[in-house]
Image (cartoon, rainbow, N blue to C red; front, side, top):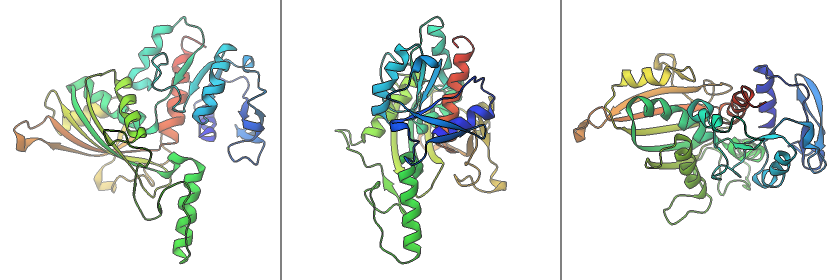
Length: 333
């Protein structure tokens, strides 16, 4: 995630005087190197425990929640704005949860405020909220039911390593081990596996529902969210079923979705929309199907089913974090 963030900052010409890289113990995410690349130049990775955040105006936290919990408030106290990509502050009532194309206006509420923490939602919610926003604005939302097929990169490098290792071993008729996932992930599907609550939803799923409602600012919206890990390295896929307050044709819904340029249409004539290829390395969300439903219940036009794909590391995390920074740049930095 940190590498993708640095790449996006450079590609979008974000104005930077100096880049600092910090990590636990002065190591990068691999734990075996002491530099990262920015603009094709090595940047020394320093120890976060010893780093002076007063040297910076803006800090991106692409780290586990425990690290953000410990050091993000210290960075703010030192006079540094913080954009946190972890889950630590997403549901904190005092911390704005932002997808700039959806609710970027919330940043205007503290145009003269001192530096503070701003949270970026999880990649599935960045993808989902970006798709729901134009439908909500144009036709109103009554309910949302989404199934997300998660790429293993949602679990970081360990997820990537486990899928690659299991695939290689299975193809060579060798026994496999699983550490990150509770079952074989290669050539398999695994439902989200953290602890389920009384509702049956896992903690991640419950958190995603709360994040979506917070971003869309629709407290009464009915949301059902299910997550399944798929044997895909990068790119989350979503089946999104929505019930609209106002009927909309497929053409009208498509026009609304494509209006701002953050969503692109993939014509079926060019091939099916998949996370491998079309969805990888893109800064947009790919939309491959829109189907109308509800005719059997007499409310034709109020129900739509969509299929979308987005790069979870780039679009779902790095790009959203940089877009938050670009929004801040206009009035705060």
